[in-house]
Length: 412
Image (tube, rainbow, N blue to C red; front, top):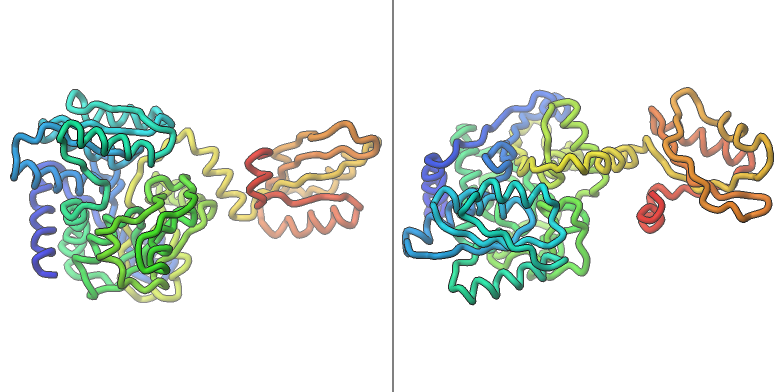
């Protein structure tokens, strides 16, 4: 699509008056690990720490070129899109009204206010995003404003395609493979429309928000009944109609759904090894390398790290999820005999690499036994095989609830 490529290149050129291109960095650690030339397109290093300001800039630039009197840009977002719109409202000197759910963390509200300054008004409406979106669209119609979709807008898609234009210019060639996250599809549809069939794509969704895979299976966008918002930058219930039109010929085998707990392992690895802070959605492409390792050997691969807006108040949760996913931490409900020496017998089962992270009596009314919630951390995952074998041999009745989502929600 030559015309689309020209428009994306123009958008990238126009952006240089607002912010620098994001770096394309060869990552030695990943390249050595996977036997490939792996580059990271660092969208987590834009002024708002995500690629979302690209689409906002391009859409607003084109709208204002057609009608300089647009009085109000309206959007609904709980995160990166809100910050991108706010940043561009201040840049263009226009007013924006940003609707956010009442449940939006204060940190995100504060950052949006900082980027928009006096040019934005934030309205907190609705407990769930669908309620927020409906309120924003109704308000936009009422004030005759311009609604800025986070992804389902041709000008937004064109703006996100500037990522591809920069990759091509920085690499000096088209990469063999591009791995990138999918939420509503703005980034992925823009990049795919730019490169066409010149490279291979791996599109990555969070397991709790796999709306592209659902759409490909149904042949049309379908709304997911439930969404896990942990990877909130990509957890979307319904892929865009315009974005899906550009992605509908993707082979379903090229779309991966990543477990959110496993994603936390990658987030922790990159923080500890590379010193790179990524939000959950921003780590999706990197985590997917584990699943395509055999396919990328010897190839030039670009992974798009799409965002770095990580709230460190969530750090404990990410670390917890990562250790559970790596098999280094488990939770058990243990029936402890109510007799002297029983606890000591249990403690003797633990080895020098094992540690108790949680110990809580759940029920004290039983005459002969008490139920105990116990969390155990260890240095190596294989230690748990020995621990569980020795628990059985010692006659302890226990249940592993590490991956029981219902019990974990209430007890852990």
